[in-house]
Image (tube, rainbow, N blue to C red; front, side):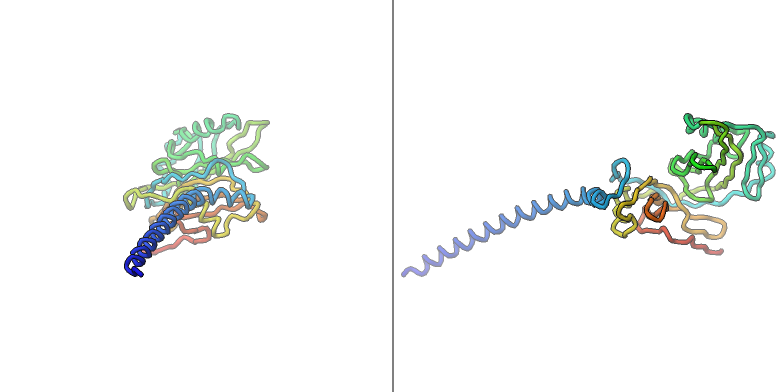
Length: 276
């Protein structure tokens, strides 16, 4: 018996089997990779739909950019109050502004009317600095109000230290009168680092979902990328980009927060204060 010939036959058969198995493995790996990519792309939308979590518009996966910011809270001076020409009066202690004449806002032209108010140098100490914030405003109920915030490179600063709340009273139908304004203001807003990539909207929603922050049957009312205050060092505040997500569930509406730099949930975090 020619054992060498048999040995060659087994060797060829062994090599052929290995090549066949390697080919199958490579194909399966490629298919698994494609399936994984597809599942990764559709996973959060599929899971939200399965849990009957409602939301509007697609979840964006574009990568935004932002800064770490530093700013000081403004103290309104006598000279700043004197620039209002008698059309409004301001209390420097709590930032309350009362108009001496009626200023009307129509809900049908709300955004344009508010923009006109926010740019009026005869009424406001800081015209052109605040931007209308639709997601924070409500004309429903007995206490309608409109929110506006300071911005940095078109990104809102969503914090009590940088906002204006416009209190309204319904005159009739779609017409509202401005009763008073309460505002806060920031000086010396500067970036502490170079602009950097942030997590996407989809990544923030995914983080909230997998950490059980989006209950089944809940509704995502809105989501917004804005600066939020996380630290106070002496007289300076530090603001970081945050994904704010409004959620309504069985326990009512609340806002979840995801740090857009490191993708950590910071909803319950308190502002750290460091004295000089």
